[in-house]
Amino acid sequence: MAAQNEATNVVVSVTLEPVAPGHHAASCRESLEAKTRHPPVMIQDVRFSRSGEMDVMRYAVKEFRGQSVNQENIFACRLYDNTYIDLHISKINYSPADESLLADVLNSMHVDMMTRSSAELFQQASRFYLQQDYKSAIGPYSQALELEKTDPKLDKLLWYVLIDNLGMSYGITGDLQRARETFEYGVSKDPAYPLFYYNLACTYAEMNDASQAASYLKKAFDHKANALPGETMPDPRSDDSFKKLMKTKEFRELAETLSKSR
Image (cartoon, rainbow, N blue to C red; front, top):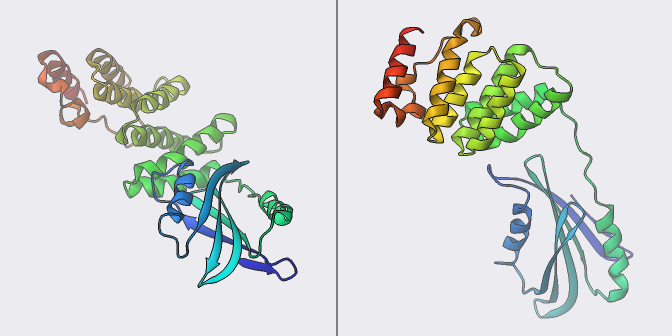
C-alpha cells in the first residue's frame, strides 16, 4: 500500500514480506541492513535505531539522475506472525523543520494483534510438522501450549499430540533442554502416560545421559497399560535416539527385555 500527502510531499508505503523459516525477531534489523547493500540510488548518512517494537533505519538520497532531491528516508520493520511489516516514509526537499511530520507517521504505526485459539495454532503448527518443518512448528505449538496452560480447550487426545510434537520439534532441531522441559511438563500433568516417559528417555539418550535414559525407559514400559487406544509402545532397539547406548551391554539387555514386553 502506498499514499502521498500532496501538501507536504510525505510519501508512505507499507509492504508485507514472508519470513523464511527459522528467522527470529532480531533478523528484522538484518533485513533493513540488506537494503543498504545494493541500493538503486546512492545513499548517505545511514543510521539505525529502535522505536518501540520496531527496528528503524534512516538514510538520505541527495541526488537522483543528476538532480538535487535531498530526500530523507525512514524504514521501520516489525516482525509479526512470520511476516515482516515494513513501513517506508520519505520526503523530498527535506529540512529539519519536517522532522515532526515524519515522526508523526512513524509513531502512528501499530499492529493490531490477532488473537487465535489454541486449536487454530495447533492446526497451523501441525501443517509445518507434517511437512517436517520443525523449526516453524515450534512457534505456534508453544503458543498453543501456553494458552492451554491457562485456559484448556483442546480435546485430551490433541493435548497429548501437542506435547509430543512440540517436544519432538525441540529435540529434532537440537534444543534438548526445551524438549526435556516440555516432556517433563507433560509428566507433571499426566504421570501415567507412558509416551511422555519414553520421549524423556529419548531426550536423555540424545544428551548422552545413559542413567536417566534407562530410568525413564523403564518408567515408560511400567506405564504401558495407559497408552491411548490404538497406540503401541515403540521398540527401543530400533530407535535412533538409543543407537549409541545400544552399544553398551547393560542398556542393550534392558532394551531387549522391555521390547519383549511390548
